[in-house]
Length: 163
Image 1 (cartoon, rainbow, N blue to C red):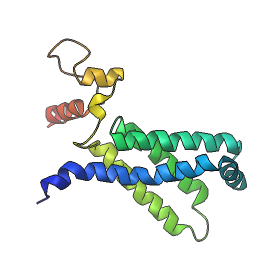
Image 2: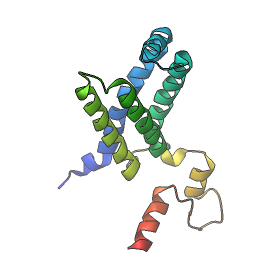
Image 3: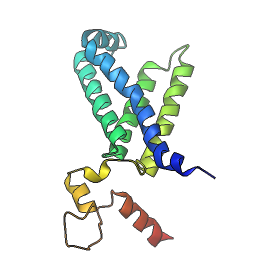
Image 4: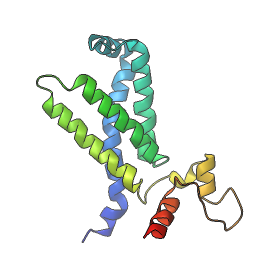
């Protein structure tokens, strides 16, 4: 039996630990974009400076989404795509198996967020985007059920009707 505090706070801790890796590496890029671009260029990546800036944005924005729980699934998807691409580009050579396996483990954690959502401790309810407003009852008729197809309520309703 899982302790209720672990069920309550565990997803937040898990999301935060996953995001920490991307936040710290994003800060590393931010503090030395030219060196990062040089490394990317050495891997044969074209437009290395632009790629470094785009990766910085993806890491920091997606990590923020993951930690806060606001669009955590979307942030996790972005980090999955980034991590898989990074593994294929930078961790397939000799002596890279452990790094590649660590990246796959990170992808596994991110997939858990994608499948199960951010969990009970999340600021997702405070999101102001139109889909989230609809999900939380701010859009549409009072008392009408959400049918956006993206939120947990819609996923649960779909699962219940298919059972």
